[in-house]
Length: 374
Ligand code: SF4
Image 1 (cartoon, rainbow, N blue to C red):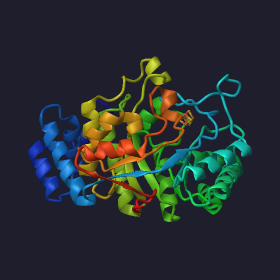
Image 2 (spheres, rainbow, N blue to C red):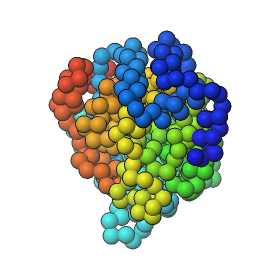
Image 3 (cartoon, protein in one colour):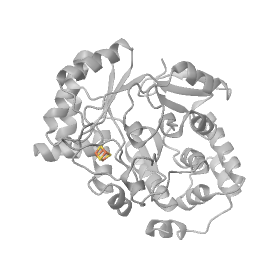
């Protein structure tokens, strides 16, 4: 058991799973021991938890499954970091290292415009030659080629990196990014917001406190973000609970999270798994409970996205019956999960999303990045 688990488990007497479910259904805010108990459930109570989460989803957002038409542009896979869970990054000189220049970025953005995507996502490796100006240039090229698209880009790690390379504050980086066309920021690089776990899986990344600080700065500057967790590697259940608690507290302060996206660890091609430091990803039970537990615990984040890229389409559908309300994006050109070993991650057709939604009695609705219905 990690230190976090002990703190959470020991903080108050546990109540029964039924009591926790009834409390959530009556609108009571759950506490950390409640969530710990939910995520630890190993018996048929799993179905009752999922049913309650589905009921709360229905009350919160109605009978819909939403999706967004989006395209990734991962500008480079060259990265100065060595995160143990990453199968995407390469070093300069590696045979499959790549770096898109202005022409390719403009061409990809024009392709996105032709595909009528409403959102362009860019998250890339931390290229040794990048500074704040490099990111600003990329966003301004995207803005020029696809003026109607929402630019969902950068994460707190990229903001911190740009600030360090340019010798300016993270607030100044965010100001420049916003001015260049950044519409919202990715809540990735969160992984698990518990520093001892971060030291194992991503020692070169920013600390929990820095991640929280940069997200809060973005929210206060009117830049909304998503929130994520990456689970199923070497973290404890208590670490997951702490992570969700940090997100809920932050959302109470700013209201800037648009959605929560649980990201199930894809292990196959990652150093962490190969070196025996991580298990082979979460189980199906854990995936269901992560979505259901998030819906029950994060009472201030209206949307829970199920990532078909991480879960596969069939498990994603099950998670839509356990509190999830959004199936994410079409994901033209997904590379990051593919790099870690996931299959069939490049593009999910809306007709297939419709089949998934209708099969569970829900209506598929296209949305913008900020959840306006189209
Ligand atoms: S997760 Fe991001 S920062 Fe870490 S090695 Fe991969 S590309 Fe680099």
